[in-house]
Each structure stands twice: as C-alpha cells, then as structure tokens.
View 1 (cartoon, rainbow, N blue to C red):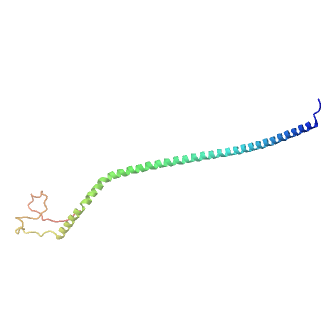
View 2 (view 1 turned 90 degrees about the vertical axis):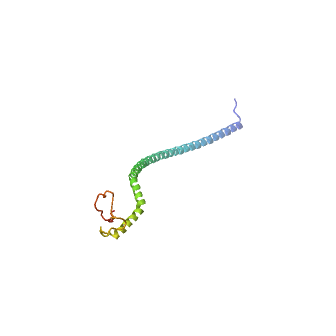
View 3 (view 1 turned 180 degrees about the horizontal axis):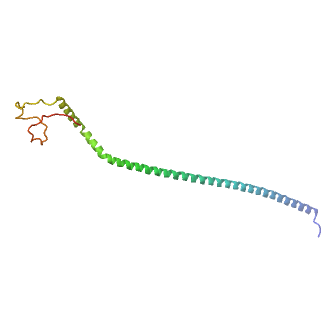
Length: 169
C-alpha cells in the first residue's frame, strides 16, 4: 500500500485536531455541569437541613402551644367549676332568703296604714286618760256606760277599767 497523499494527511490531522478540540470543549462543559450539579446538590442539602431544623422548631413550638392551651383549659375548667359552685351557693341563699323578702314586702305594703295607726295612738296618748268618773253621775250614752278595754273575757269582772292608750312596738 502506498502512503496517503500529504493533503489527505493534513485534512485528517485537521479533522483529528477538531475532534480533540470538540472533546476538550465537551469535557470542559461536562466539568462545569458537574460543578453546577455538585453546587446545587450542596445548596439543596443545606436547604434541606434548614427546612428540617425549621420543621423541628415548629414541632417544638406546636408542642409548647398545645401544653399551654391544655394548662389554660384545665384552669378554665377549674374556674367554671368554682363559679358553678358559687352559683349553687347563691341559689341556695336566695331560696333561704325568699320567704324573708316576701315578709319584708308584706311589711312594706302595710307600713302606711300602720304609720297612721301609730300617729292616732300617739294623739290619743297626748290627750291622756279620762278623768275618773263619779258613779252617781253617769256619762251620757246609756246607763252605766264606761269606756273600757274589753276582749270579751272581762265580762265577769265587777268593774271596768278606764281606757288607757299607750304605744308599745
């Protein structure tokens, strides 16, 4: 076999040089892509760690909040029970005081007539007792009519006592 012509050798060498340049260029691009992938993987790993740390902190914060709310719930339930007991005690006291309140209302309704009666009794007391009457001079109004305090039980007495007004409260 004969040697290839110089032009063909030069073209083959140029082609080999172009293939080598292209291979070098592709290797450089591959290295750059690998560096980019490694950088992104490292960034993702750091981001993943940050997310895990944030989630852990959120979990702890949630647990603390749940514990605080449970404590608040227990306190609120104790307060409700205390208030219910106080309401029961007050209801019992109201039931005990109700008859007395009704009695006081009745007294208040009867106060004006009672005040009038007391004023009349005071006027009668101011007038004083009647002078002693002489049995030989009967008072007008009938034979032997005497003013007396009588309850119906005193009919068997020989004499009647004169009326005397006084106030006792």
